[in-house]
Length: 367
Ligand SMILES: [Zn+2]
Image (cartoon, rainbow, N blue to C red; front, side):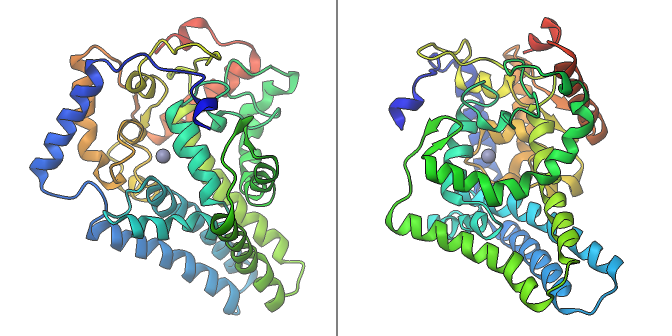
């Protein structure tokens, strides 16, 4: 895998990266609080898992009217995304706890909410985090032929409406992830054309067990207790809530005109160093909105996450001014949309521009 993935290389790290690391390490040492885990993260993890379990059990066991069942299904979907942002994501980055065994155990949360932690680590930690937005390398920017998310993807006539129908597609993305994508990747041994080490032995057993456990709690148990057609709209509602929320956070951080969408050519070096690429392809949004930050696992501070994926998300709000100051001192643009509304508008603009034709070079050269 290492040989296949070294096709798109980086120039040697410049002074910015070293300075960012030094400034952040100094801050963490001064604060005296851990870079990973801690009581606040443990309490948050418990609260979000309880939210999911509570919504699910209430939906399953309480005799509620249809409208309440719909609200509970919505709550299950939002809680699934919450587990994804706050538990699965941090644990698979090794930042939920300072103890590796705890991270390994909670990494399995990805499997329990329908995905596969094995595939996630290769797709997200390796492909997305090493080459964010680099065409052909970051598979997150490839949502299939129905959406054109980067200028390198071919334009089709129906893309002119993609800013309108994209959200409907995000609604089925979770179902596709759970029931199709993982299976295809496992069978083909490739993620977006990139070979990855296939799980064997215990890892394969854990993956299959995780899928069975998810299909069991999400589909089989409800069907056994309530064998009715009304499960279908509830499933669709829950999976749409999860899919839209998970997709939105990726879109708002990486799929806007304000960030770069470079092409990675085989055997060539990218023009930007690793840290400069993370900064050029990523934007924060709605910084300072505490409830939003709590729910999306600090991923509205996506710049800080991309520069420091080994630090737990609860620390990102303190790191943002340090990162911004350091970038300014080095003359490197630091991107942040002021509000959620501004970020949604920027994403809609980018989808509309890509759907209408090739965006103006100025938009792409903003980085
Ligand atoms: Zn990440």
